[in-house]
Image (cartoon, rainbow, N blue to C red; front, side, top):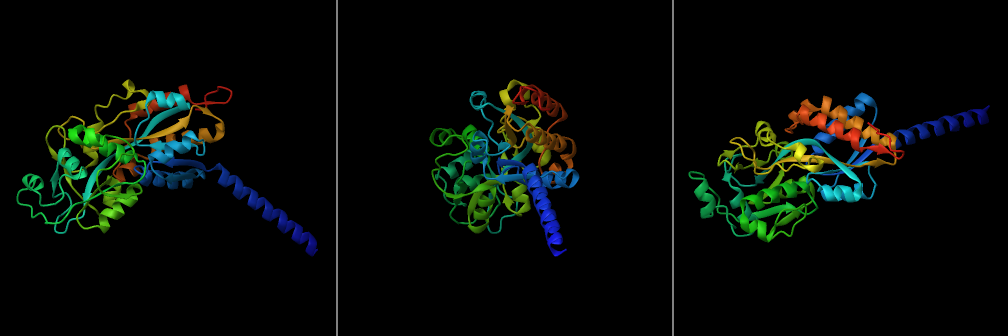
Length: 347
């Protein structure tokens, strides 16, 4: 009897283990941008509660995410820098937008309240070039009359990893500071002139909070979540703006999605009196030919669900959901571009 009970227990235990393995195997895997991590995590939590299907997303930076999807070690990659058409074609990839949001400059200055200081792209570029080194420098004081600026040294904080947030930030500075464009330029990974590196939005936020006199750049949700002190920024129309969902939407209002291969719009330094100057789109990368069609379908189901049901959570976390017209374009691109090994559409 004991032997029979033991065998029964072993069979039941093995079955349970197999069920757990199957459940784990069914989880989608993604890797890349830290910019959208808070909303992807929230979507994943709600989606699993609703469907039972999980998402394991590694917030490792856009550069690492691109490498992982190229190597086919994840089901999708995520990048805040859109890949060019020739790069997508060379790797057999397709690209589509998932969410929009804003990047902000953050500071650690005693006696300064969030949003009190005004900065311009040209000025921030000079700070990141190492040309302006004190917070009470005349150039900063001229923009902020009546503000008691501390006589402390500026510590520049930047990303240490390949980052789409860095791309958005350096693209903005390149558009507003000619010397920054020449000496550093725009990219996910650049050769910084000065400063301290941090890995991910999390690392930059931690360094800014730790170092008195620091300035850095992070996604707006990280700044709010960590109660960081942001700055105003001057937009292309000459207005000093506070970060806000409506101003991110304003920057995206005139985006020409259909004229850019792979939906690769860049929303930095957009015209418009209320446009936030460092607005960005986060993109998903998938292989056009899906070796595991079932997994590919599940990824599309997840983002389809997020488009339809994730808007409120996105807004709550200070992201901007895609317009319905863009979602329709994305779904059409899924039908046209994503196939199984036999050439059959998976969506």
